[in-house]
Length: 497
Image (tube, rainbow, N blue to C red):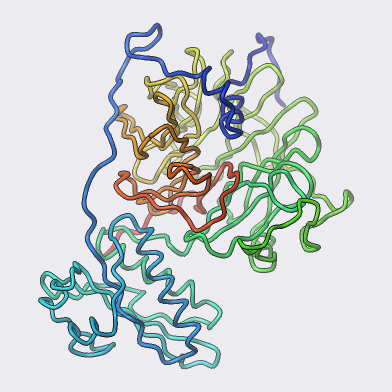
């Protein structure tokens, strides 16, 4: 059982600031000017490395060799080009039939390339693909080949050289081709066939839980009953946990894997072009009070605001008892069983390292929210960031870097920090707000909420070094707490292993 000790009432600074910034509060902007080196309480490393500036190699996507329905071939071509645009390691060149005739010697599967012609067209790599009827009725076969324009080398796409799947899975097959392309070029398999969960307004709720493909397609409503629902996070068993205010107090809820699969498949997609009335919830997601789910973790006087899980299945959650917030371990019955931070300050937003041995979190114990780390048992708590007086939203990536959002000047940027305290800024500042980063399963990219192009807030994708950033094709809206689909404990596949 959770027992409370007398603590001075403290304002939950990081939550309050995040909410104010998300709402665009000018007053909040004025209140959280960053600390400068030499300010009281500011000690330690204060160096921010700017985003890497590097040119991207060009990947030419040749026209698909099509032997099936034209609309399905158009889907494959669109996905291949879109994923290349969002890849962060190559830039797309749209090949033409003339390009294909000039630089190829033979069609798939015996594909060969004329390197000089490919180089003359400005390509560093060339991707060829073909979509044909499968051996089974209702199946397609998608074959792909990647060649280097410098030396004519044929790259090994492993399982993605030839795929066979039901016709309805044509988009997934195309995404997996780019998984193989990333693996062949960078050594780490991609995660283009995954989804991103996030919270945003929707029909019938102030903040709903949504799912969208990693390229911005197939936006689907998962949790849409009246109220506020946020902090979605993938669980080790393939289900989803999230925080909801259904009972008046924020509590944790779970969607089991089978239910999540059904919601992902059956919940109606809401087109970007259709403006939904807030009180017009689709029948599939509207629920009466008797049908509402029961919380997984709740308490009469306890507020549960987000959780994280390690490879062993242990769950750490932010719990506010009314006086301040601490990070607790909770069991599978939702009962808090160990206070990891037990500090008079506010400690929140836990994120496990990929090996499950450490937790990154936010604490305002020095007067302003900063990134800290500790062992899973709560020992060896230490501060990692010393720049600015607003830092939030840590997410520990597969390669050991912790992504977070932090303010510098008038901008809130996405940054990373490693355990040695080396920081890198991934977004351009410019007086914009880039918030709540979440790592892709492969660790090569991040998604985050931003208005960095000045057109409004939406989800963006950046490479892990900030060299390439692109928005997802989503409507401008309010987006909160995105979380990239990631099964806890599953490490990125290293090519050739």
